[in-house]
Image 1 (tube, helix red, strand yellow):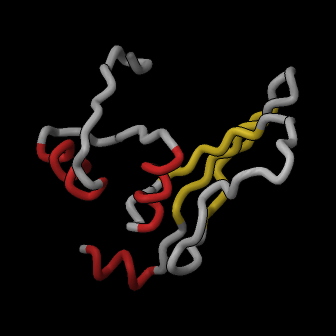
Image 2: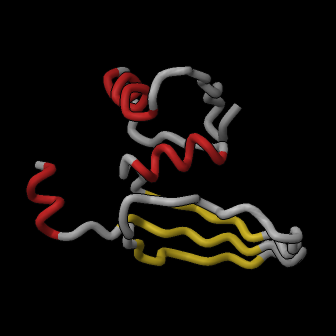
Image 3: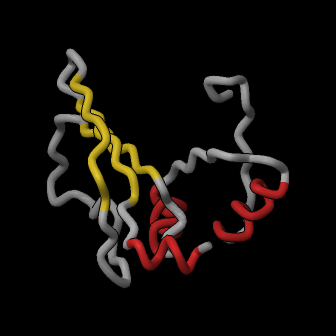
Length: 105
C-alpha cells in the first residue's frame, strides 16, 4: 500500500490509456515505478514530476537510466535530500515551454 493506504494497480494497458482511466476515476497524482513503464511514460511525455534516488554503488557497465528519447525533456530542480547512508534523492518538475502549456489547454 501507498502512504495513504492506496493499493497498487497493475495493468497491461499502454501508459496513456492507463493514466486516462485513472484520471476518469478521479486520480490526481499517480506514482509510476519500473524501468520499462517509466521509459514509456517519458517517451510519451506523461511525467510531470521525477524523483531520482541515487545509491552509491557502481555496477560495471551499468544500464542507461532512461534509454533513448525522441528529444530532450527539460526539468526544473525542486529539492535534493541526502540521507545518512549515502543515498541522495532529487526531485524535478517538468519544465515545459510556455507555448506547450497554452496548446495543452
